Image 1: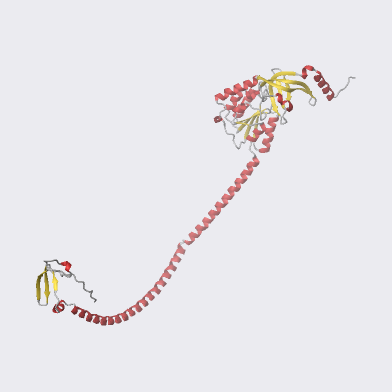
Image 2 (image 1 turned 30 degrees about the vertical axis):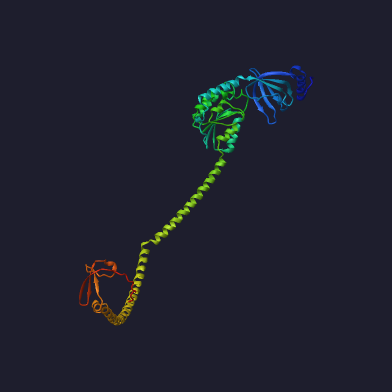
Amino acid sequence: MASVYTVSQVTAYIRNMFTQDFALNRISIKGEVSNCKYHTSGHIYFTLKDGGSQIAAVMFAGQRKGLAFELEEGQEVTVTGNVDVYERDGRYQLYAKEITREGRGDLFARFEKLRGELEEMGMFDGCYKQPIPKYARKVGIVTASTGAAIRDIMNISARRNPYVQLVLYPALVQGEKAKYSIVKGIETLDAMGLDVIIVGRGGGSIEDLWAFNEEMVARAIFNCSTPVISAVGHETDVTIADYVADLRAPTPSAAAELAVFDYSQFEEQVRLYSQVLNRSMERKLERLHFRLEQGKMRLKLRSPERLLVDRRQRLADIESFLERRLKDKLEQDRRSLEDRRQRLDMYMSDSLKAGQHRLALAAGRLDALSPLKKLSGGYGFVTDPRGKAVRSIEQTGIGDRIGISVRDGRIEAQVTKTVAVRLPESEE
């Protein structure tokens, strides 16, 4: 009976064979970088491939000094290191110690060429981007029917909003016929009048994702009247479809988050809006009720019956007031008339006596002021040629003719001299 070995024994034996092979301990391999991943630990995992085969490779963080540039998809490089077996997985891989860049791979060159052409045509311009509806109810999905992408989208959609309808077009997402299948899926879902379409797949190498770098797929997305979310690969994977789509999601899961609104959050918003609306309605009803009560009070105050009663009462009050005022006025006038009569009698008596006294005084003064009496006492009345009384020497000049009236006649004279004399003021 042949010997039976464990898996670990066989793997260790194979590894020992790799270790003893001088050519594999120091080897340089040329190829194109694919599926490049930078781990948080600092290690770099990638695949080195050519037209016929590929080999897994890793450069540990301690060997990073042998890398003088940023390792990216599609680069043509030469990797120097050793080939060994990773016992846990039972597979061999290239452990890189030094990497030098040779040029760009064919696929990456095709990618950049097509991206430049489509960008020059304006297919990446933001003016052509359609907004993603905020509350989508029907979401189309173009992806493989079996795979992590559709499962993630379904799980997230069910969690966020179980009422959203998902329509899947099971397309090929890898291989030569994948581009035709994806284009057919986009066109089919676009004709169904959906709210938004998710086009994508899970992660992979640049070869795995190449269907989404095809020009016909880009044009199908650009010509789609339904908003399209591109969700191809992982966050670091970028395809032509990402540039053309209306919105790029880093992963299919993120695309589901963007396309399907959170129903619980929506319910909470509706509840808050309802509360705000109810409070607003209550305040408005309170204001209207207050205005209604005010209107009722004003209507009651302005009631014809109330106004008539008020006017009657007011007229009665005015009538009573007028009667009292009339009686008071008559009594006041009677008393005033009696007082005036008494004062008039007293005034007439006093006035008569005072008048007699003033008349006697005036007669005495008049007699004292009589010109004839003054003329008979030796005084004269001087006038100028015009007959005006001369009261001051300033009214005459030397040679002027003047008239002097005396008790028994008139004297005509001529001024020969004037002398100013200051007389004491008379007191009356």
